[in-house]
Length: 372
Length: 173
Image (tube, rainbow over all chains, first blue to last red; front, top):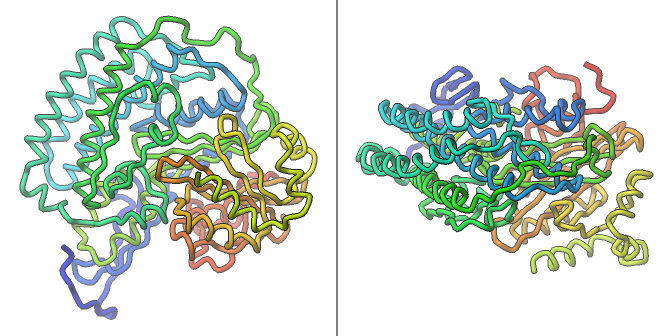
């Protein structure tokens, strides 16, 4: 798709996209060396909202750190908390009641749908269509209301506890979630009619910004970036955790490697998340939401532990080095968008700037999650 | 399957005699206790995936690093992350490399190497994995570990003039 051009280095100029640019969805700067409309070289500059969550992990006790995880990714916060609680439970051998694990999975999937909805709206807005965002936010509002009623917050949830969740779901939540599923399915049809088939939309994405499988591997890309390039990789399937093996769902994989493939993956993922929520509500067992026996002070035995989970943005990894104390010795957060964004520099060479912005949108960036 | 192959390939990096077999026979708990007391000797350990979340754990000399990473690259592992740990009591810094796989042949490999705390330096792996670039820059600014041969070793997340290393245990804000 990229027209062959002869690059003459002496005619290039530097263009700064960001740090305050609407297309970057946050404080991110890309320094681009341009030859007319074409990118010769790009350098991504991150760190504008770096808050050093990893150092905070070394001064706070385990329960105190619970709220930090949701401040990493403000759109899909629960997925990150899930990784954290699973890691600490694994390290200190805390049993989780089945009901709590199901509630967690339902909540994480609801959060994933809300995150994808926001991405969908923002992505189409990047490409010049404003109204899909309004439709998407309307559906997202339903999820946020549901989550607010149970967790107490709309974005930065602190809902999971070591051993379970802090509040049980009520009948109102369940009936609301049941109402949401057909509503969302109907909306998805509407979105496909409104956006997916649109000629302008397709022309902006089809064949644009190819990311090869080899590039994915060298950079450690995950989520829709890998799955849009034909890599069947989803931590929920590849490395089953929690109650995900109990659910029947598919991992959408597209082989076109372009921006449209990444779009298709996420749209299909919404449907798959709905399937998980549906099954979760059907199977939701009765019982306690916190274990009967749980250590008062959480002190995982000395050692090195790792847990990977599939968040809305990809494979999130969290490593804990414990020295047996009340405070982690070292806590490393491996954020998925960090790796996805990293390949932007190489992939956007020779691309037109408008295509590069569409590519950036298709990566689903949440900057606080890159910067941590 | 791939775990066995990788294990055999990585084992070739370590001299075959006694110490290694000892390590393999030890259980995790014994090993962990040992780690708490004194730095662990170089070698390959198989970890219990259900407890630790990874399968193979290799600690090696910095000059064996490129060889080990090449083995993983040829076996089509993808790079998960690079980070450091400050073992101030041992006067050492540890660099930890995480690798995982895209296929369903589940195998997570951790490569670690320890360097002296006063002049920490390891070779860069950016020539093998392009995606190591940011991870190494991050580890460099947080721990002061120098990645020799890195093309662009400037601060990534910290301010561009930052001359401190916040994740060192003796760092005072």
